[in-house]
Image 1 (cartoon, rainbow, N blue to C red):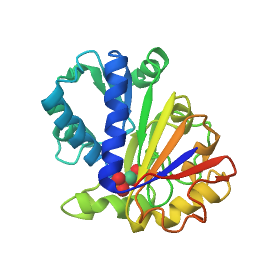
Image 2 (cartoon, rainbow, N blue to C red; image 1 turned 60 degrees about the vertical axis):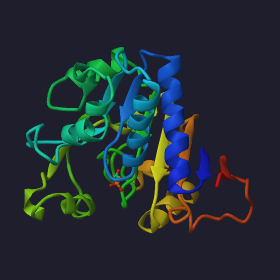
Image 3 (tube, rainbow, N blue to C red; image 1 turned 30 degrees about the vertical axis):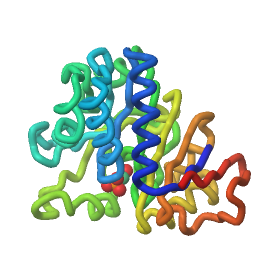
Length: 249
Ligand code: PGA
């Protein structure tokens, strides 16, 4: 695992460039995408790049990490709506190439036939990745889950009233995420500092699902200075249990 620490602007710039480079070098790449406040700046940078450089997405396929259950896809808070608004409506991707986990067996067979080249991840305040909540077995695959109280309270702010938030969601499993070739996790803001310290410096445990990423051969974690504030940063670059730390800005 590599850990890169920098400003939010630098992070959005570097991560978007990695995605643009993948799209340019592999026009049929499969992107694993995430929603939430964290990746919005990366998507804005991809849209700007598409407007300026016409980066071509017409053969690109995407699979999102998760989607609420029992919420219309055109609901303002569905993850489909988020992705359309932040990215898909502004680039030349074909909507039929963009996928979300749902109740059908489609996603499992899609993942088998289309290995994901790059997965973008955020992290929940409780350490979840996708909606794989604390206690999820590392062997889990795509399925319907009940959201934890932490997640319900973290995401209820997006709904008009907290009781409108769905209590269940479909998510890719941890084993699905670990199969991806390259993983980028972004965390920003002081509210992520505690969970980031545990993810990087604590034990690898199902109680903190994101900690399993330390077992994956190609994971880069991008942190702003607030999210990195509690890390042991006594050296600019150091190795700690296989983790390389680098200050980029
Ligand atoms: P956030 O959510 O980007 O809104 O902080 C991250 C997550 O819950 O995975």
